[in-house]
Image: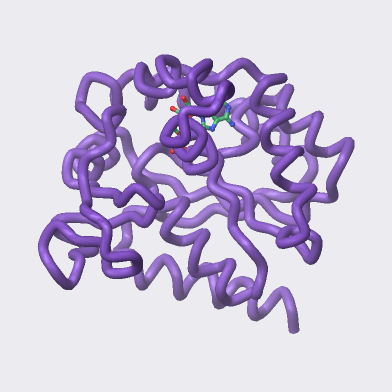
Length: 206
Ligand code: AMP
């Protein structure tokens, strides 16, 4: 968990690599559906671009159908799902969630970061200051062109942050009660946050 721009996908990819499991970023799953112009994609395109949340049950059905795939059978890192207490309760009925990492940053930092975030069509994330691609405008991993997400404009980011603070943050309490939350300071630089998360995991595994 964490506000937009806190580094959930970036850190999640590194954790997934360390734990040798797959990450499933909910936003990427949605954007893939939109790109493929599937029936689902057509239904949610406007909602995603406007920065609102997809109705809970629609999101739950989509994520559960993905999580049934063989690549997730040995465990997985979730990113961006659940985003409401309703989604979290549904998840708890089907899977055992071990830990919830909350990467915290201020709204001011989030707005600053997202204006300089660039992504490729396959969901790989870069930043014009903190995480530059090797070749300007091109994804290091798949060679595709980088662009700014439609919902990363300042106006939409402010709306998404408001939803995060008002709705999604209720989840923090939900997982706090379950004693699963571990908080990391996402304002530190990317490698430092990764180190802190991996050190935590190494201690847990030991
Ligand atoms: P993200 O890439 O995680 O910032 O997600 C981008 C957009 O996808 C969000 O602003 C929502 O419109 C939608 N979305 C992603 N995850 C969820 C979710 N768990 N529940 C509802 N909508 C979601």
